[in-house]
Image 1 (cartoon, one colour):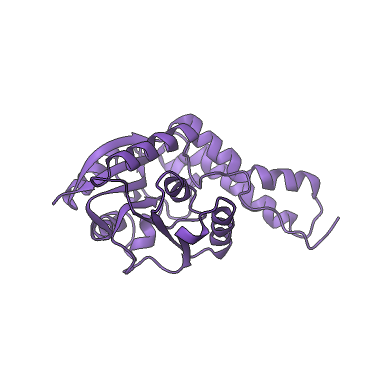
Image 2 (cartoon, rainbow, N blue to C red):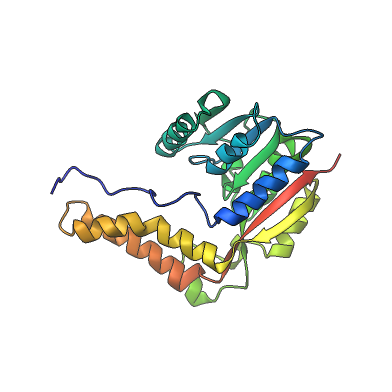
Length: 258
């Protein structure tokens, strides 16, 4: 056993969120068929990770360019490698930088998938309003924003909150109707409202940890095993005892009001 071998990270995930292949394909068809009189020419991905959805949009829109912004260099390196492998390296840039007050954009398609917090220093739930106003500035007239954001499917119980992340609060998220209302107040019209289903959540949560679980089974005495076990057990508990079937994820496709 090699004591220097660190556990793998997110290798089983295609998208960094509960997003199925079918939903992603439908989303891409809508975005590329209805943005501007022609096809979109620019894509901006906020909190992009490795930018899988952005890369897929670029694959079906020849000539379009993309920029992904994130702070995690490992994820950005994965995105660059994927772009190189697909022949997209000359059309996309992955930048390690903060999105707060970003001068990137405006773009025809702006993606912000579970990354509203990256656009503002405001505390939840106020960061959503701030993020939507930032997104309104970052999208071209007639363009599209895809916002992926959490919401409460129902009010969590005290027991569920205690099993979630530290300081989890009922006020941390809006319900779905409230989230859409905030988008409208920020100067958008909601073209499409959809939410991740149970299968998408289970696929995501399982893939989120499966490579590490397999590593732990093979390396139970590794120097990093205990802290890794504690981390993945804690996350699994947050999901299964805390936010499973309580917190949802909405995908809102938004068009700016002229």
